[in-house]
Image 1 (cartoon, rainbow, N blue to C red):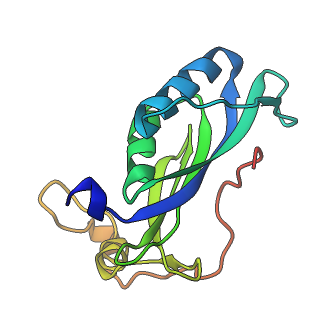
Image 2: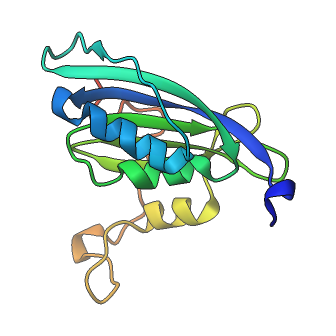
Length: 158
C-alpha cells in the first residue's frame, strides 16, 4: 500500500512506570517508531519514588502501535500500555506490559470492547500440554472458566 493510500489512525502511549535512567531511552525508542522528535513530560510515580511516568498521544498509519510495542518490547523494568484506535478496515489494538507478566496484545472493536478471537479461546480451553502435545493426565477434564473473577495481579502503577 502506498503512503498516499495508508489509513491514518491515532493512539496513546502510557508509560506507567520507568526508572529515571531509562526515560531518555524510552523517548528515543518512541522517536524511532514514530519517525519524528518526541517531547515527553515525565512526572514522579506516586507508587514508587524512584520511578517516573508519562503519556504521549500519537498519529500515524495503521500499525504504528505495533511498531511502538516492538520498540519497547523486552524492556523488563517498565510498565506501559499502548492503544491504537480502530480505523476503516483495521481493528484497534491495545498492548500492555508489566515486568512480571510480560507483554499482552488484544484487538479492540470500534466501541472499545476487547475482541477475543476463536483461536485464543480454543488454546485457553485446551489447557497445558506436554512436549508431545498431550494434556497432563491430571488435567484431562473440561476446563472450568472463572468468568468475571479477579485477576491475580492488578497494576498498582496505573
